[in-house]
Image (cartoon, rainbow, N blue to C red; front, side):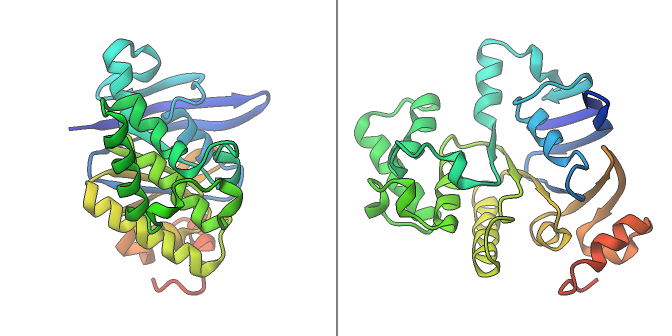
Length: 250
């Protein structure tokens, strides 16, 4: 059973405390959202879990072991198990690689498949995210923003991860496309049983996909809520986030 745990994690950028004593844990199959205004530390927290940056203090544990200390097969297991989808699909995709080539990269890195098996797997993934096998040879410039994000999602799940980090994955998309991407992620979560950590400034978006919501402010977690009981929010800051989403029914 996969578990990722943060224990009193901190991260400074000069005089700015980006993450201040953050602690929480999530296990395989769970879905947690982190919400807060820009600059509150939520994306930095996700980047620490993904191994993109290192915490200044505290622990980020993968199955009980500090991720910065993982070596050999344990490190490979971590890299396969934890995948991230970024906010801007345009910058996340290499413009020189076709959709098929981008999706094939993690397959080659983590799975011993021959060329034909890899091609079939790429086509299967394109279909899973609502694209077609005919899209395999197209380049990012040929796709809309929502389609590019679908390619990024296909690339992330190509490794067969057990933990998916979603960093503001709908914020650059218009409302109808946001709904499509959220429905896709919900279906993929059910199909693959992945744990999800979703980062967003929009508590309504997070509520749709996550079971538990952590509210961050100024680098720290100030409140924890069940997504089906947001009316129980006690912190004025959380209440302001809820008030900013008029369509949500608490």
